[in-house]
Length: 250
Image (cartoon, rainbow, N blue to C red; front, side, top):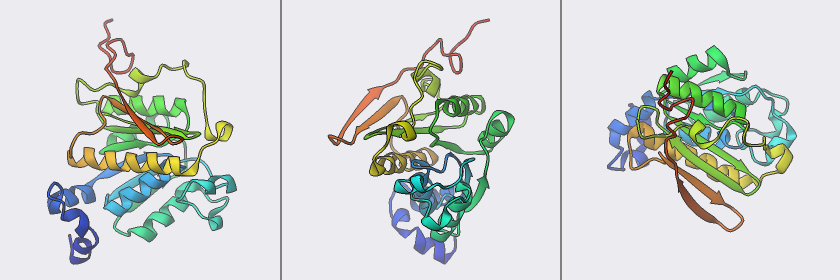
């Protein structure tokens, strides 16, 4: 790190559990963020501000005026711009140390697997179950840690999945494909600070995993009720019959 970086990250470096060694780990890290919307916005901004060296952001959408209520990566001048390009400009304005790879596409199949394999950690900030299941499978296949978040109406949830840990469940252990109805903010609405809270927690959990700090939300689902400002934690167990991470017999 140079003198400018030491000054920029000084408040983190002061933390005994981080120091210069931990900060260097963040600078060397590569994080894949799926989605540059309500959750991906605060997650990306905080990870960049904290000094994560490489952010790969994948999203196939363009900025719409209805996004501006909650997607703080984007501005009025970004309307009809690919979200990943708007995200790149916002991140570079905050921290030029962070190198942004903008993928204006919906990652799936082999390209998804390749990007997940290259990442040190994945932040799932998408808004649909099909993508979540695909990202989870790629993370399990490659052994890449996954920080998953979701928010709708005035509620949100966060969890962390560590495929290399034999006791850690995967996202598919929590939800079954085809079991849950598709719910989106476009259909059900969402209060803007709720996605900020959940996306910020995703950034926190990502940093904790990258630096092996404290106890990440592995095997736990943290649920937030914004209407009553209440939190509850649900324990998650690995499903031996899970078709993605379970012990299957031929």
